[in-house]
Picture 1: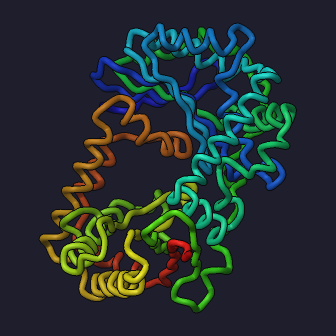
Picture 2: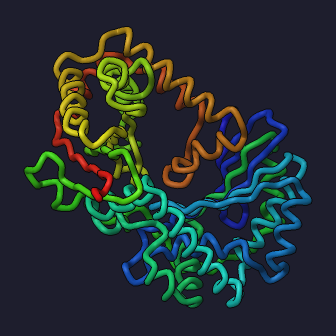
Length: 418
């Protein structure tokens, strides 16, 4: 179950995640997304993702959908701050067809005008759907209020920017972001690398005329806005209609995903709020009965360096102050006294089991490694498992003194009073 990374004769970087599954995934990940946008074209990376399946020089959208279905494929894509990932899961026998079809869409997309206009409305409806969901609306607001624009703005964009993006802007963005250095072909399954190399070379252009390499240095430097310098305990307060609980979030800086202590940090957050054994769950839910759901985890806003620790809970408005007070007590106690051995072992085993569950399938393996393969051009599940197994309690306690001794940035969304 190793990842073999090589280049084709026409310069494409390929990562082959070898495993014994009868199902496989083929995908193309691009260093792009919302970090590389300006306010005038906010959401253009997400728009590019949507129209990528809408037609090529050889196929229209209907033919594309039927071909995917005939090969037993489940195609999909997503856009984040720092990548766009197009992928197709299918039986391993269908990988040659999947490579031909996905490569055609990636290199030869025509973006028909009429399809682009239909998709514009689809994206607007998608944005409405997220904003109708209270948690989605709150998350969008937190990004806008707590983080610099390039990191915090909604990946989908604004209603105004979605309506104004032109076909030429999409063509320019796509061309500008698909330099050879900025995308990786990923295959996960029981596929021989020699065969995979031939499949790709047979179905991709022999020469490339791309403008430039974007490179991670094009990411803006900062992350937080001035809002975190306010002295108020709750730094952002919002009221929303048609909800009955308050949503409480706390955010603070976390380690880079490339940090040597990354796995120790993940175990620390698991111990603080990762499961029924965790300190937050034991105190906030089991002892005090303040909420049904409470937890803590590390979140990547932009891989690898812009990450936060996120503590969350959902409780009645009258319990918000107590929730915040008791949560801070838990974190400060861990910071002062560290983790006990029992909780540490629970968290470490839980984290390892979570990784193994998420990487059982070909699709799971690819999804778990996609950031590393794009940015670092390397990634093995074995290395991740080894890193978790080597985590020591003393490293977690040392990190607790550093990471939990920071300003706690609380945000609350309350039900709107009649």
